[in-house]
Length: 391
Image 1 (tube, helix red, strand yellow):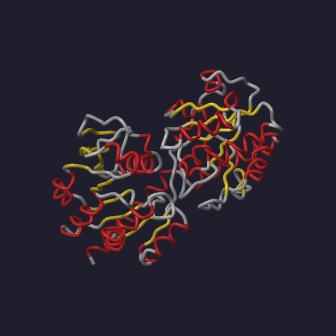
Image 2: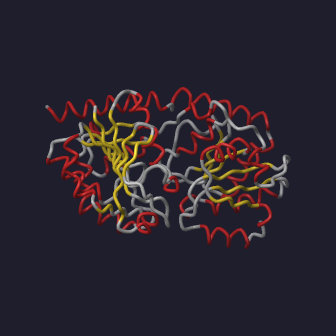
Image 3: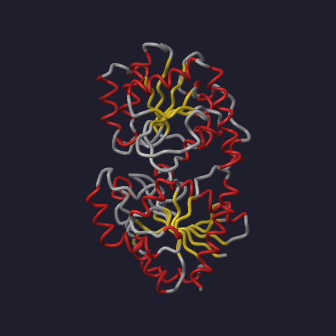
């Protein structure tokens, strides 16, 4: 099967977060299964830089990059403007199936148009981007009226990460028979040889006795990092050796976060590292005593990364729900400073509980979220979409 993946950013543009590793890992697995996989994307690397190479092969994936009109718009507002992709859209007639990642991006409008022209079915995976109650809600609603609803209804299938997202698709007019719930996955081979404990601590001058509370992800106002910081101040009164480590690229909230840290007088107890990748990221997970994301939507890859490294998780009920978290790999609390503090403290002071949550997490990702089985399932979805288009 010849498969085209369309995404606004691709390897090595790791700063963009969630959908990128999903598309990358899925594409690698599909190549291993004997398929020809291509990715169409933009040249965005981060808010300031572009990727010079227009075409290359990465792990057997043929990558084709189109120049963004504005890299800043792409990074700050997720408004991709790939010059040339529309002109090249006739080339999609050479593919059997198209898989679109992300929802409200402009290139989806002409990908939809050309897929209809050449009768090539496409799959849409919104990656948790359907909701309009976050920032820029009015812009999202304009997009929906101009292009979005047609992109959704003309898709052969849509992929939901959770039942919550499946209901949101239905609320936007997608029929139930088009919706498939497929979780994100993880490549367990990357976790077979984990770094030795202590590497991250040594790099950043952290003592062995300090208890690390790790946040890893984009530094954005919707992530609840302000709640975590306030809870940390309260927690520090009970666990004096606690250290809050915030890892990730700035997504507009870093200046406000720094002001908050200063206002709360915890500059000495909070470490801001910026983004880390690859082996450095694994070192952060390995040395962390607990991983905390106060607010999430969809199916964060970071949750599975934490589980694969045996790191217990604490999150809240805000925005979304995953049925395998609470009481199994950690705690899910109300979005409340006191409740969040109590959950984190409980794990920090109870080593046996932390070890049990860590062991449970390893088992869950191994049995439920490995990429090999998810790619096999996606392969069947592609095949069924093709059959439906031919009928």
